[in-house]
Image (cartoon, rainbow, N blue to C red):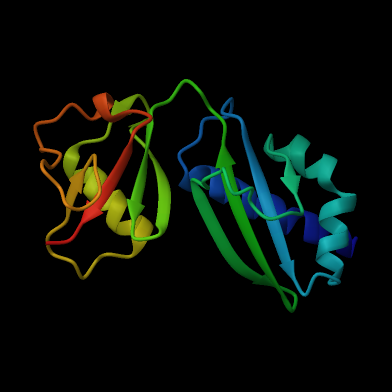
Length: 172
C-alpha cells in the first residue's frame, strides 16, 4: 500500500509536468527520473510500478539521466519521504513547433503553439525569462545567431518561421 502511494506521487508529478509543458494527451513524451539517494525505496517503486505509471499518465518513466541529445521541456525537483526526485520531461511530438533557446551554456526548448494559439513575441520573452530565471533583466533580445549579432528577432516576426531553429538570448 505504501509503494502504491509512492507510485501515485510520481504519477501526480508527471501529470503536473505534462501540464506545465502544455502537452496534449496524444503528445508523446518520456520522463527521465533521478532519485537521490539511489538506493531509496522510491527508486525501486518507480522501477516496479513503471507500467502502472505509464498506463496512467501516458508517459514512460525511465530511471536514467536525460540523454545528451535531448532537451527537457519541463523539469521538476521535489522531495518525497527523505528522497530527492528530479523529473525531466522530454517531448517527442512532431506536430507542434518549438524553438531551442540558448542562454550561455544552457538550452531549453519552448513550444511556439499552445492550445492551438501561436505564442506572441511578448509571451516568448516571458517563457525565456521563466526558463532561465531572467526576471531581473529588464531588456532581453533574441537572435538567430550567437554574439556578435547582426540582427535581432523583431516583435513583428512570425514566430512560426522560427520553428525547429535555435535562438540565442542576448542581454545588452
